[in-house]
Amino acid sequence: MKNIGVVIPVYNQALPLLCTLHGFMNQNISLEHFKIVVVDDGSTEDIETICNLFRTKLDIIYIRIIKSGRSISRNEGVRKLKDSDIITFCDADRIPVPGFLQNHLFSHEKSEEDSIVIGNIKDLYLSDPWNNMTKIFNSYFTLKGLRTPQYSKLVYKLFDEKGESISNVPWLATFSGNMSIRLDLFKKLKGFDPDFRHWGFEHFELGYRAYKLRTPFAYNAKATNIHISHSRYSYKNDMGESHRIFYKKHPFSEIKNIKKFMNGEISLNEFNQLSEGNGNKRNLPDEYVKITNF
Image (cartoon, rainbow, N blue to C red):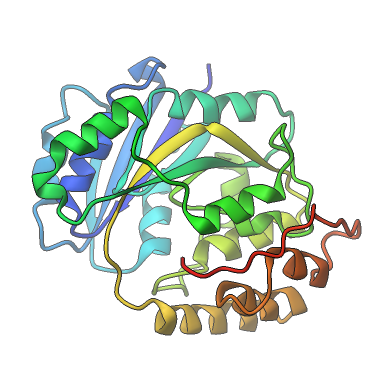
């Protein structure tokens, strides 16, 4: 069996991280085959103590860096996983269900090519997680009370029933909160671009570079993690800055148009049709829904 490394970047999410690490205790592969790196991106909460609670249950490494953003955090985590064959990215507020790691691994083992595997994201909406621990773990064990985010519903249409890509823009599904990639490919891509310091697009940009190298993308609906949803500040300013960096690095029409798609100005199908792809232009099944929330 291949070895899997898990990278979890975290900034001030002590309670969700506790739930997420508990989820990794319930994976159905041997603990000797996976290692977790928690990268504390300058938190003011005591993240190290949370990690220490799992020292005897998980092979876990804690590192702390000066606040640098998610790209640098994830890259630092990967550097600690030199003996891993597959790297899985899971955010601190996303609890992996049993089978999460096994299904990511399965998708890589059935393909002889380097690939990016996208997992299935479910949202659990809670206004006060601290006082709803029972509901969190009930949803974790029963998978009840969960929703699929609108964005996820859309981009899963980029894949057929076998989980194979059918679009010109599979990189739109590059969810860094639930994805896996072979270590050799991650190194070839030189990781996430550290120029992205704010919310958004650093994962798309990694996926876009991989796609331009003709990397296959796959979706595994069984590789599920549960997002403990939280209120967000307005992301539009950060998204604008991230898009500026993205477009400067890749001044092509599909990168220009991604902002229109994210803002709900064009549909997924329209965006797919406006994108060049890798020379084999494909049309999606009719889907003209536009993003109304993200």
